[in-house]
Length: 63
Image 1 (tube, rainbow, N blue to C red):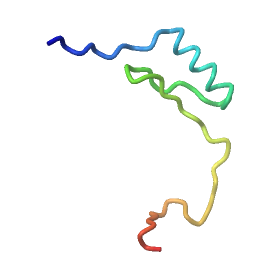
Image 2 (tube, rainbow, N blue to C red):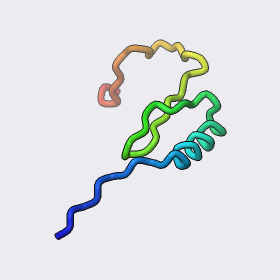
Image 3 (cartoon, rainbow, N blue to C red):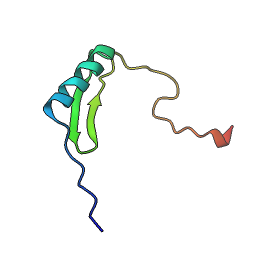
Image 4 (cartoon, rainbow, N blue to C red):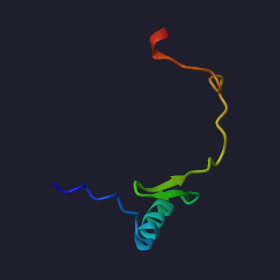
């Protein structure tokens, strides 16, 4: 039996194309990581949403 091939890294062109598409949808997006699983982006928040639920645990089971 042959061994499965190792995952390959995205090419420079694939990274640039992915960034171009994501940046067109979310202009503040930036590349966080590049690995065999693909390109991971970070999306900075334009503004922080403040609500009464910030930093509080939530569970639907208690409802």
